[in-house]
Image (cartoon, rainbow, N blue to C red; front, side, top):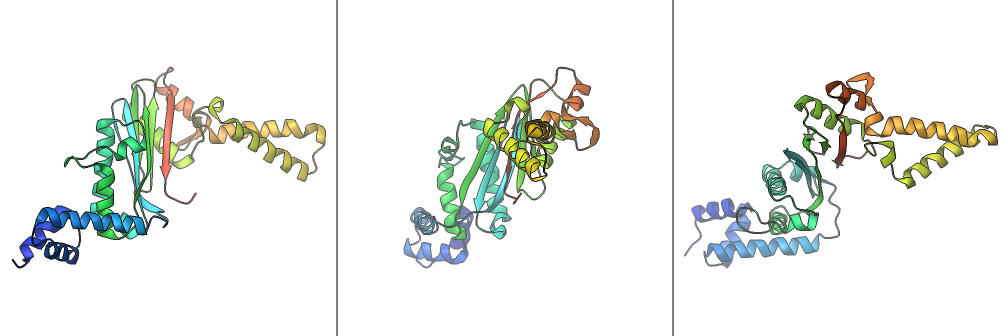
Length: 274
């Protein structure tokens, strides 16, 4: 039986593959749609193996929140052209929806999560590789939990943030904090949470600068400690100046809403070069 345009259109709708790929798969499968789908999927696996050493530096970063849980996913690819493709974005949205629904504990668990057709997310990504011919991977999966949560997606789908709070919070206040995380890229919520290796690096940089400036050796440590305090103000979320009102820190902004209100954790994922 000859392959018709209606057959090709039907397979394209099923698979998302290109017209010639669908035509060739149907011809090879003798118009058996299940076999044709398997051919297209095997092509995706073959392309994935061939391009495994390529760099996937573009992609789509999306985030969502639901009550006490918020998540970010980043589906990565090789080119911005594919990253902006509607079907690529739709797949990213499906992965995010599965994350919000199932709340997996790790990226590997998310990859194994089935979508509506009962096939794992990892299989859907491989299928998409066959369609585009580009390397793809689920580059990031991050989540937070708290009494309340918020998500923010920066225009362009290259940067997203999620933040958790210790109690209920007004939407705009929460969104402002999520946008602060996007804009100012803090290293932690509080200075107590800054990793020791980061502290050591900042102190050493400050000591080197002081010595190069000819400062007396007996003042070096004091100067370095002052530089560290400045680092805390610039790089820890609660001590940062609020980007919408520099007279307030984020902690002060939150406490204007409620004295007990605070952010407890955040995640930030960006594909931009920073």
